[in-house]
Length: 163
Image 1 (cartoon, one colour):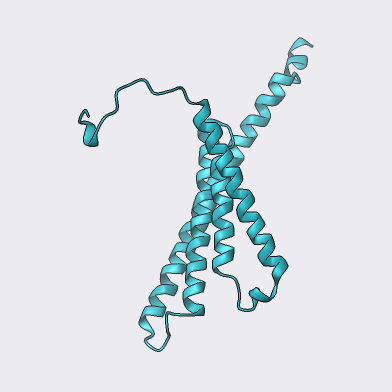
Image 2: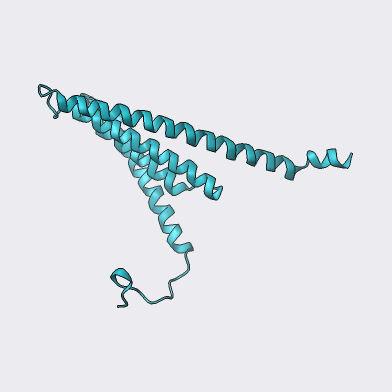
C-alpha cells in the first residue's frame, strides 16, 4: 500500500511530468531539424532557379519572397535554440523568446504586401509590438546585468594580453 501511495505522490508525479516534457522537447527538436533541412533545400533550389533564369529580375517581389523565406528559416532556427536551451537548463530563457519574437515581427515588416500602407491599424499594431518587445528585451537585459556580481579580475586586452 505504501508503494502505491508513493507512486502517486507529488514528487513522483512531477518527475513523470518533467520526463514527459523533456522527451516531447527532444521530439520537437528532431522535427524542427527535419523541417529546417527540407526548407533549406527548398530555398537553395528556389534561389538557384532564380539565378539560372536570366529573365527574372531580383528586385521586387522575388527578392522580398526570398528574404521572407530566409527570415522564416532563421526564426525556425531560433525556435530550435529555444528548445535546446530548455533541454540544457530546464528553464525557458525569456531573452531568447523575445529575440525570436522580434525577428518574427521584423520578418512581417519586411515582407509586408503592397498596399499595407493603407492599413493604419496593421502598421500601428506592428509598431506597438516592436516597441513592446524591444522594451521587454531591454528590461530583461537590464535585470540580467544587475543580477551578475561585479567583475573583480583585471581587464585583459586583445588575445589575453594584459592592459
